[in-house]
Image 1 (cartoon, rainbow, N blue to C red):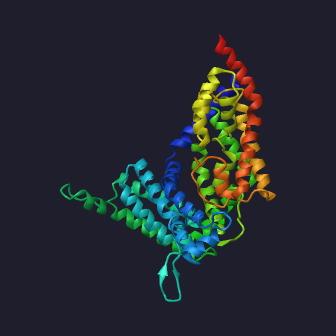
Image 2: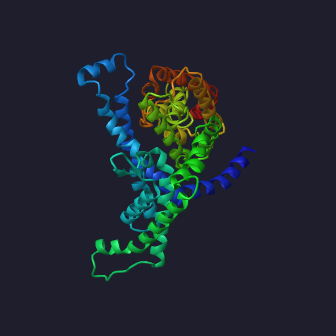
Length: 425
């Protein structure tokens, strides 16, 4: 019965996963965020330096650098997280252009033109004009995704159809490419201006207002909810048990939502306001995925220190170090957990258990809401908990490690006994 069920899932799940992985739009969004990840993390860590939860730290820094010392650390944050659209669009447009086999530089430039035209312009008291930072920060991320994907797609249609100004072969490529983008660029700008004019006649005022009200805000509410978190985390782990990389498939959809929630928490943390979202990218990475997807840190400890089977002890020693940094592919494919009827059960269900428990202790106030510091997902547990939620987060990580050991122990013991028999055969 189990084999039939597995065969049925593979028959219908593999094609679906392949389509998601090969979808050029989702791939472009994923590549855009992955490309910007390093600087977003660095910027977030600078913000952490401005708010280290250490007694006497603020007073010490004030004596050393003066009352405005925290602004030195907030500038890198402002120039990364607060204008993340700029960095994400570069990676997103480049990835989309590569998939559609069109010029990536022109794709990036045209994407920015469309985004800037669609965004509102503000005027200060001194008559200086500019685009609001919010438009190129977390609040503008969904508009930038829509505008970039449509712009590069439209650009590729013009190129593939030959609707462009072609220069003689003797003209240098740099000059020729500029004229190639002339006609599609003009059409893209006309469309963007027309959209801006149409939305000026509506209650939304701008296309950005439309996206915020009808697309971004509902998606953020869903993405930050307990119910959506449970469903997404369960599906991610379940997909992994059939050999498909669940995080890669799910994150292409969820990462823009969770990262925006993280950025909103960061902004509130920086302003000294109440943090709005329990669920965000750091909650997912550091409270649900200790040791990796499936909260397998406990399983790694069991294999390393409590296995009777030589095979499991050896694998545990190899997998333990990566598990500390939340990388568990050695366990998933080495034990394996994939298509393992014993270990599949706790692995697939663990996100529900640990997401629910972490949500509960955060909701009642025992653990502070993750402060939005965008630390690397490879940050070891306990250190991660401390960085995002203070000492309470570190303590909760310790509790989770023991809970993970207890959660996996009955299933581990069965699997260890069966593997030990194979060792002696």
